Image 1 (cartoon, rainbow, N blue to C red):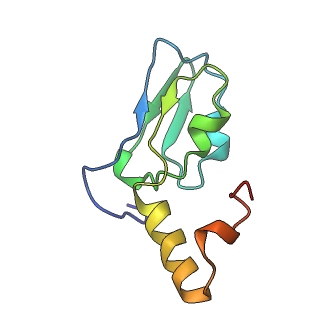
Image 2: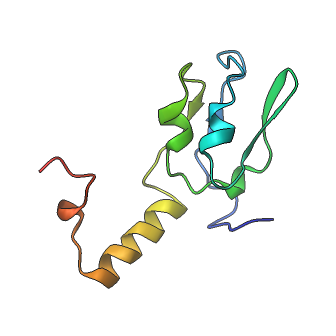
Image 3: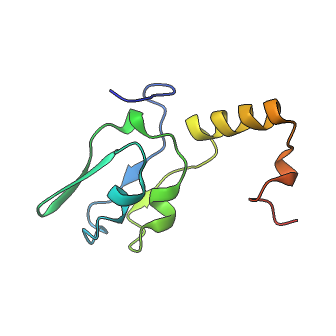
Length: 96
């Protein structure tokens, strides 16, 4: 078991019918949530997902969905912003 935020609240979904088995999700997921085994892809443990959104953003078939900004990743980033005194409007993610 890896680092987990809260059990059974992750918004991560995988649509097997849309998946082209490109393996991009396995490459961008730092927690190893996905596994590509021969002719199939699977989510190993949804609770390991920190909902950063990298898998969904990088999936060319739009087979992966996740509501980034609601789970572990958001909690970590939000805590870091508070500790460093950086507001969400000053981050590289903002359009300003």
